[in-house]
Image (cartoon, rainbow, N blue to C red; front, side):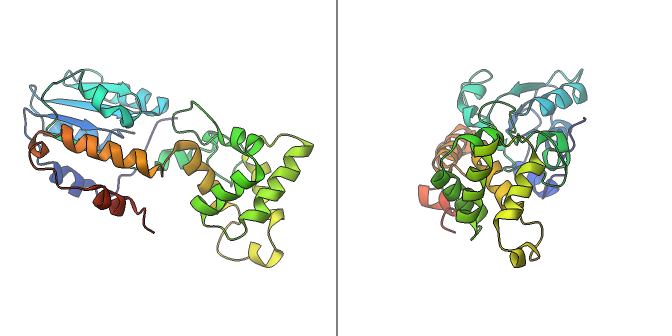
Length: 254
């Protein structure tokens, strides 16, 4: 399936980079290549774009989309490794770095990826298709760990009931599919609550997705934003974001 994603604040993001034709730029979450293509359109043949994504499907799409473009380098990696990635291209830092954080619309729309509670598929949810899957999490974590994840990342007041329901269900057989989990969540909460505010499993699915992909690992994100800032040439002598500023940007205080 072709990797498609609808970027938010597309034009504003590109304009903010203030692209120099001969500069070096990194798109840390290249996805389907929307931002990357706009950056390339503003680069000369002497400029270079480093397009990074951890999703193999995104890499396949990017490789096809930019075939024949000699001033783009496509890297299958997590942008947390931005320092080592950029070191392959420069010792002086980049002219601009773009990161569109969060899950992509393609990953949510492709039922086979296991993000959706509306279609039956293997319970996966991994952006990189590597490491612990959502199925691994629900079948191996303790009840308390599951409760904490669902409450912290899904803000679901029924987290204790849902975690208990998951543990009861997996004692009979492993939880393997999205619809299995959705039904377990639905049956774990009061009947009246099932009729309020959308699908009853949406918060649990959100929580597991965030946990499996480390989307809100605030300490790591904070460190990588500081690293990226240091790698941008114009910021080297005037770093402005403190740890507190970065945490506010990431919403850690909410």
